[in-house]
Length: 241
Ligand SMILES: [Zn+2]
Ligand SMILES: [Zn+2]
Ligand SMILES: [Zn+2]
Ligand SMILES: [Zn+2]
Image 1 (cartoon, rainbow, N blue to C red):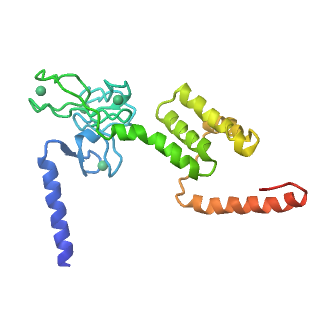
Image 2: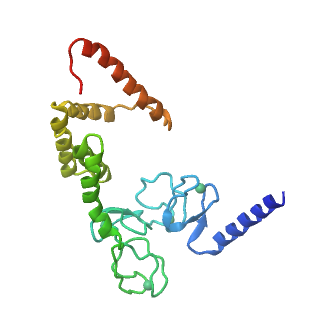
Image 3: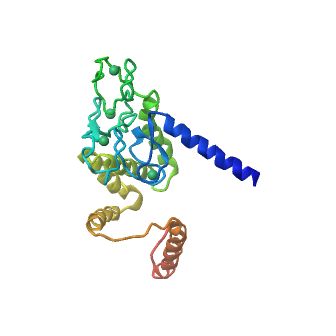
């Protein structure tokens, strides 16, 4: 029992610390201590204005109805739309100044100088950005040699990931070419049949519950189904390798 009492005391202390720090607030929805810059409560998912902490209806609002802050800005280095308050650009890893080193004003976008005192900012790329830039090549080379369907599978994965992040024709064409290049493994172009399927599926509104563990039942089941289908097919003279 005494242990439990100690735990409660610790939590109270932490909440007090949250109130004292100027960069944090209590989530307008659930009261958890959150950082202004995050713009979203990690406990309940409530989105709020990173400038004034006002609760927002959805994360698609363009500006805060309470203080008028623009809720996204263009990265000055690469033009990617970045959420106001974000500490770095998710596209090019440019680090943003979040507090003016000269006057301590809070900064929420990526200006070249402090709007309060005019001090110029030098924005730097996160040091690991260069490592990340080299990573895709390494993933492709090593990963491609050791996964099912080899390099086309990895290229497809990277192209689809890139397209989801920012839809471009380049990513779409590379994804299509990766699918088509499965011809070298499959000796047919059936992989391309997934494209019309995807196009149709994205236009249908199928409410699907998120079942975390369903995959682990589905995967062995579908392998078993394929194995069973092969028995009559090989009896009919089809060859499997
Ligand atoms: Zn919350
Ligand atoms: Zn606001
Ligand atoms: Zn950027
Ligand atoms: Zn300043």
